[in-house]
Image (cartoon, rainbow, N blue to C red; front, side):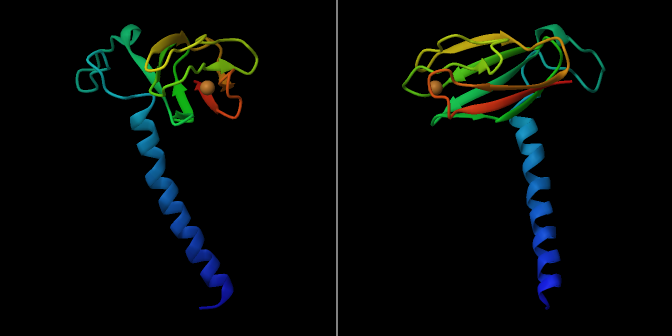
Length: 132
Ligand SMILES: [Cu+2]
């Protein structure tokens, strides 16, 4: 196997790994089933009460990229033993201080787009909310 062929094989392996990772992120993030989630079988959609969740643990946001609907409620759960925030880099939205083992909710912006955020206390903690 020449170097070119080896490179192609590596790319294919990487694509497989990424393909497997993306659905997992979606399941754990924006569309995690709750008692209020959309019933896809009947098409009913009590969408107003649905919400997305971001979990903070070990000084990281999970998922790091969350896709939500315009104005969707986002619950931010802090599983660490220290205070964190989820604050848009523009200041457009913020949970304010989320106590250790506490949670706070925010509304996603109504305007579609990509919003970067960080923890105002530990600014190396970053993530993204995509509204679409
Ligand atoms: Cu923090």
